[in-house]
Image (cartoon, rainbow, N blue to C red; front, side, top):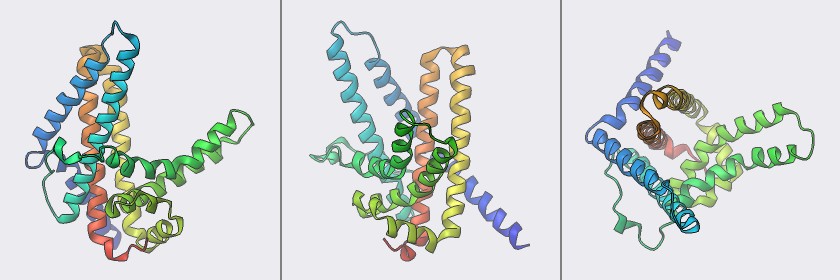
Length: 245
């Protein structure tokens, strides 16, 4: 009976996460963000008479979009911690200020920390014969470490906290049941996102062309971003007093 109750809690939480991006004005945020991001990427992908200028513009737009999406990721997490039930509005450009790259650093650095061992090992495999299972193990360890390190970075506004190995690992062990449940939910959503990405690229792209498929992919990516940030925010809201970094 206990296992059944836990399963119900798990699936109830999963269903609530699944509909979160559509609650309130979320559907308009998703649609508007999809159109905005997709249009920018299409425009910067057009042929340019000035090759190097085109590359520079593409790079600038790419950094801007990455930073802006990172800022929104942080907004969704913190709104969830506050107890907001609907997605927040897109951040205003004027609020980004002089520290325009700071949100990107806060969100990206924990991923670099978590997966750098796997990346270093992969680079070594180009020069030496390396067992594949070790690479898979390092990727798995990084995937397990990353969510908690990302929470530590975002909620303290101190990305270097993601390097605090003992603090992150101790926090995972302290709330391991809730953490592993959250991790499992995220794996389910990411797996579904990968399947949707492949289906849109192969099937939908063939039927409608690359432009429509590109907008569909942007929609899926934004949806997963909101779900991922929401899950981490709710996790922190429930267990913040037990985290030890």
